[in-house]
Image (cartoon, rainbow, N blue to C red; front, side):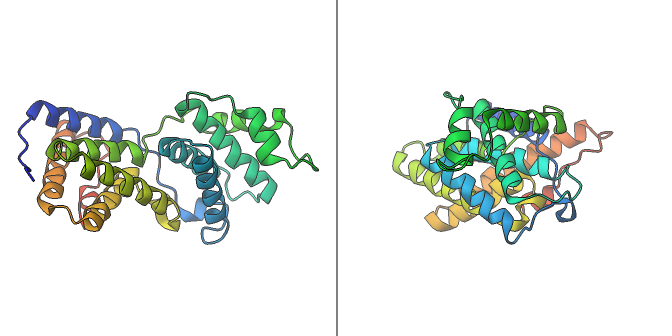
Length: 252
């Protein structure tokens, strides 16, 4: 495999995208501020969202955006006690917001209410309840929902990887497929709420290289390209307190 890569215009484009994404990552959540059980209730909710996204053919980006919205909202509730029905409403409202941002067909309010939140025999919520919950989430998050996701960072990694391996489309497709599987797997990890989205994407990248047995030289070059862009960006913003944790992001 030819692993030489000399397109410096592309390199600069990747660096710029990566830096821009870093500036819009969602806040890390402290477990103490998370109002539901990390080891019990959270995996049930996330598994449910994964199941819905897979069966409704929603994108991995919709899934990640919905989970981020859900968890950022929960972190603002100050340990408020939530019933399972309320949690379900919050989760589906987050998913509905995610589809409005990412999906072409985004009018799922009626479907989510009738087919997901309610059963044929028992109505728990009305469509207006879901709409009100969406608006409550938006108000609480100050209408900030366009967070950078791990999928965004993974797409940058994939572009760089594809630049090295452009002649091997089969490998690129396998890489993309395995990486998406790993992104879903990491969503179920309890400690993901304490990680930056860039870290999640990077750990998936490393595991993807290990699973597929890809030449480690390419991984090191990906690290160097983006590592240097972060250092350069920080040097240009010495008075900015928003420094990036390079060691955590690029260490195995």
